[in-house]
Length: 75
Image 1 (cartoon, rainbow, N blue to C red):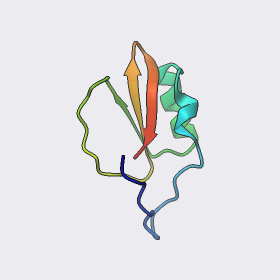
Image 2 (image 1 turned 90 degrees about the vertical axis):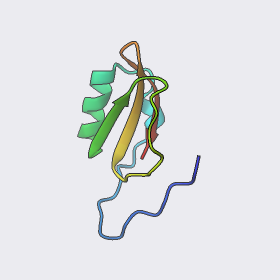
Image 3 (image 1 turned 90 degrees about the horizontal axis):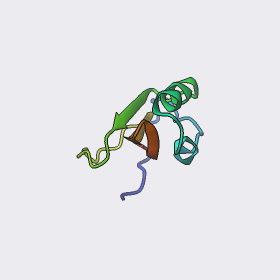
Image 4 (image 1 turned 60 degrees about the vertical axis):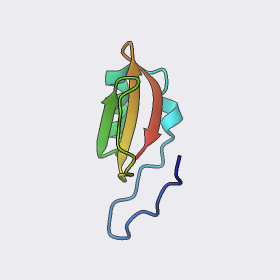
């Protein structure tokens, strides 16, 4: 995976929150928690979903399997 780009100087900072902390949580609870912690966009994806590789500051991605977060990453 490519390194995270430098945030734009005039944009909002990303929350200082580790995506690993969401793994294993119920998907609905994880999304509420992420929004409460300041993530502007939370995206839930099924395993194997094809996604573009552009990095978006403030976005948190969840791979959801059987209603639980199996993987989480920024961008």
